[in-house]
Length: 426
Image 1 (cartoon, rainbow, N blue to C red):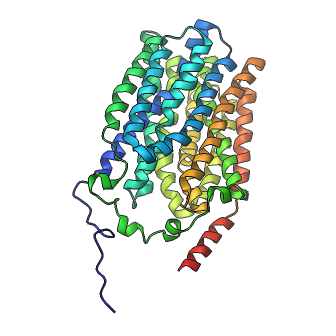
Image 2: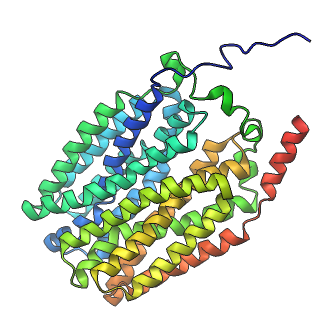
Image 3: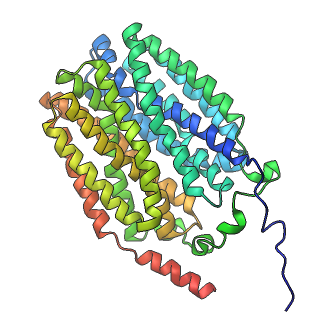
């Protein structure tokens, strides 16, 4: 036998400074601004209502349209990023996002809100999550989960920072000025950060971090997998879609209605905004900690944990009538949803492999966004009819219980098939 020496294409020493860390930082900053602004919608809710007298359902409808179109547009922005690279996609979408918030500061009719927030801002937001996490996947063969978790935690940091900032600007000036400032911040931070993005390490003459090592860690995910047509014929795919719908319906109900609810029960607007910040801060820990737990106990068990927390948090919310009780709700729900946010992608890989991971995860994400749209709209409609969020939050508790149920019954037979396929290939 002849000795085999690793070629440069299969083994490379990590440079003293790896450019992938720049990708992570730039992506983190972009998501911090994008979703910090997105999750500030509830802070603007009552000020806008008080000026125009719209119903809560009608106002929530703009957010619902935003989430539906964001999911639809994401299918295309992911493909555009593959073809043209994330720098162009994020720059263009960041420009649309910033322009949308600037135009929101000038609205005088409900149709304008639906056009600017429902369409323009959704188009801008759609070019962020999928392209950025897809780019991180290319740059990090090893520590991919950690890199993705750090990037995803940008949404949590954004939720900590942006709602209090928006509320401060509203109280100091007005909601129009607040939207204008957010638009300017988005334009500057996103466009500058986008210039540091590169589609893959080859553009910098590098290999992905730990590429040679990672090829031996999870080989069945590298060479095995099924197509999206095959995936949608499995029960596992629809179970993953169902609990994604449940989780995101609950999430966006909180993002849109928790601040109005808090002020309804006598909590000040400033304190109510910090409830969202508490959620955002604790969701960071959920992403980083439970993301690592997935590697040890599996995605299914983590899904069971997070849905138990989500269902329990809404049951607690039904009785919460003081600020500390609202903070406790935000903490439990924040940790739970933070963990869920990092469950789905590895779960899709676990059950269906990486052959068409992006396409399958993209379709799952679209169903998530349907939940994001239906949840807050339904909650707003319930409030308009009952003048209370009680039944809306009870409905969220039921969705959490449904997510817990389907997580428990989720079977791992598809993973066994992938392992068997890998064994045959060996």
